[in-house]
Length: 199
Image 1: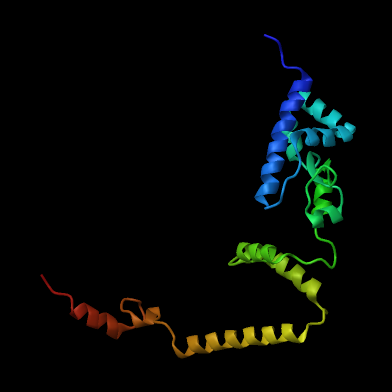
Image 2: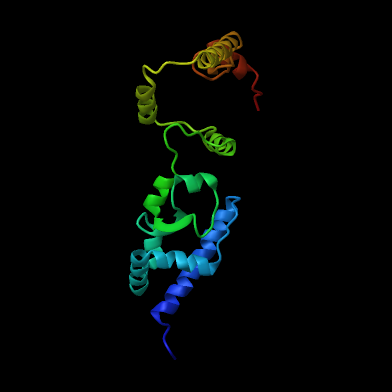
């Protein structure tokens, strides 16, 4: 039986990567306007990356390599292309995963989209930061001026907190001292014992 050539292996591997990229981008509600032939041409423009991929396929560790930060992904050429969100053969190129993250990460002065803010809110609701993280946040915010709106929110939160504490103080829940057999109330213990029927 004729063995599969390295070029055929690369072709099959790239086809799988193309499908994964298409599924990912469409899962992000983006229009993926690149054919497989165009995808292959983008790889051919990156001869060094293509040569490294062939080498990894020969070493049988291509998938592990591609999953690492040094692995290659289809990503935007620059921040402007990323913001536009247009995916075609002119706006995309092959980069390492590490470089792709730098292109896609937020820059100073940028803000999250409303849908991103909602995802972050849902993910963090109910979570508690560790003491070291809280201290780091405190150090970062120390000395930062607060807006009037921010101060008003802090005041409202503090008032609500104090109101809850006052309510808990005025309506304390039952404690162990309210129940017999706790070793503190002999009257309760004797009363309970007198009610036990003798056989």
